[in-house]
Amino acid sequence: MDADIPDARPAATGRVWLITGASSGFGRSIAEAALAAGDTVVATARRPEALDALIAAHPDRAVALQLDVTDTARIADVVADTVLWYGRIDVVVNNAGLGLIGAVEETTDRELRDLMDLHFFAPAALVRAVLPHMRRQGSGAVVQMSSMGGRLSFAGVGAYSASKFALEGLSEALAAEVAPHGIKVLIVEPGSFRTGFAGGGALRHTTAIPAYEETVGPVRTQLPGSDGKQEGDPDRAAAAILGALAADTTPLRLPLGGDATDAVLASLDASRAETVAWEKVSRSTGFDD
Image (cartoon, rainbow, N blue to C red; front, top):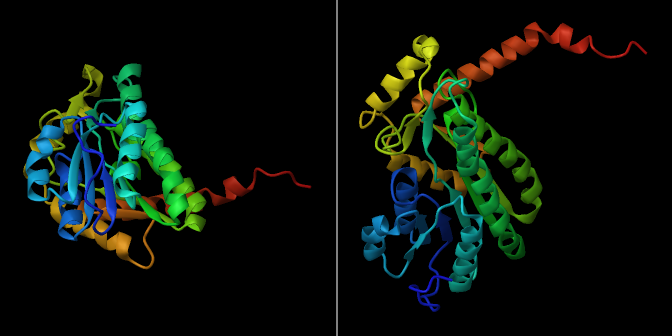
């Protein structure tokens, strides 16, 4: 338990949200939207002082906790504290993340494992920690912040997409498992949004191999160059997420942004066309008897 947070807190108002990576970007926008809706938010970040203004604006309904999501022991403490204070967790948002640009050959084991720890193993650990509480209360929602790169991939983002593909595969199975317990799963697939993801310390680069300059080089230049110019509004994304959770039928996957929507639809069309083109070969592989 956090020594600097009192055991007794005001009774929760509305739903209780537990949000990772809440100091900026989507996490911050989701926290603000939940608070604007009258809910209670436990906002976590590696540097919780970045949440001071948010907490000061909502001292009775918001609390900041330090959390590096790759510290699974700390995850258990944060979940336990939240349940101790408020008695429940209604929505958990796995948002913490970062990007990596580089060809597959350029990506080291360490870089790949670090991404998998952050985007796959950490969300899995948090989900496992909150599910017993959600099952006990017979309700809840898990929001997995993926990416359009969790549905399709392209040169230069193989490691990032691999971690998001893994998260989506886990979440699809999870949705079927927890639905009988009244728990929803929402996979969010944003495109290009003005979150700071493309700038600062959130976007890393592999050590470049000249052979991949033609395919990966443009991504190294264009993605950081888009910072602050993206069309997507994270506040509108947050509103869309709250709306999807409130819907009678919450989608399993929710692409956000025109670019993500176009890319996902094009990928689905191409996948179907390829499967149909090779359907005869695919069906020819069984025993004749």
